[in-house]
Length: 334
Image (tube, rainbow, N blue to C red; front, side, top):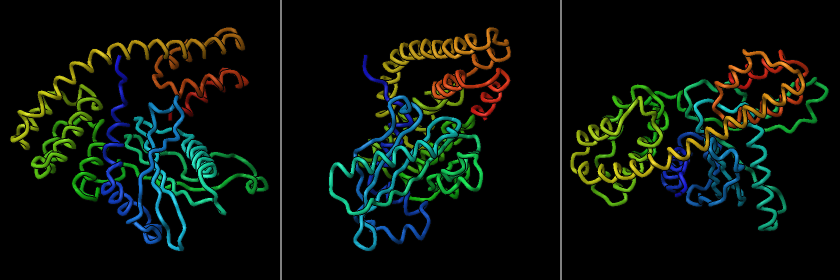
C-alpha cells in the first residue's frame, strides 16, 4: 500500500520550502529587532527534520540557516502544530529539537560557540493557546530553585489571532495561511471563492498550476467532509478559476478515489491501535485500583489522540488515586 502523507505536513512544507514564501513569512512575523539582524539573501532551507516518529502525525518542522550581523551563523526553527488543539508540552519538545540541532552541527563542523536558534511555533487550531511561551512555565517550584531550570522563550504565530485582513504577504503565503486558518471552519465552502480568487494570476504559469493543485489537494484531504465537499470545491474553482477547472478537477477526483480506498484501510488500523492504547491504560488502572469507575472509562473512550493516551498511560502508573487520574484527564484535555 502506498504511504499516506499527512495532508497538513505536506501542505506546510509545500508552502514554506518555497524560499520566497518562507522569507516573506519571517519578514512579516518575526520581531523587527530580529529581522534587522538577519542577512535575508543568505536564508537557506535545510532538509533536516527533528520530529520524533510517534509525533509526526501532529507536528511538522523546518529549519532555516542564515548569516547574522557580525559574521555569525544563526538558525530559525519552525514547529508547525497541526492538531486541532495544542500540546501542553510544546516548549519541552522544542527544547529537545533544539538540542538535536546543536548536536547535528557539532558532528558536522567545528564551532567555537553554539549558534543561536530562533524557535517559532505555528499553530492553526481553533482553541486558544493556553500554554506559556517560556520553558520555565512548565515548572512549579520555589523561587530558590528557579536558577536551576533552563530558560528560553519561543515565538508564536496563531492563525486564530489574526483577522483575514491582517494576514500579510505575497499571494502564495496569504493563501497558504488563510487555508491553514480556515481548514477546520464550518463556513470554509463560503470562504473558498474569495481565497481561491487570489490565485487567478498564477493559473497562467506552470509553477502556478502546481501550487493551485497542491492547494486543492490540501482542501480535499484535510478539510472535514461535513464542512466542504468535492463538489463545493469544484463549484468555487469553476467560478473563480474557470480557465483551469476542467483541466485540474478530474485529476483531483481520480486521486480522491485512490486515497479513499487507502484511507479506509489506514483508519481501520489506527482505530485498532487506539483501542489497544485505551485498554493498556485501563489495565494499569485496574491493577492498581481494582475497579475503575464508568465515568473514567467513558472519558477514555472519548479520546482519539494517541499522544494524549500516551501521556495517560504514563500517569496511570504514577497517580496516587483515581481522583487524581481524573484531574490529569481534565488537564491534558483543556
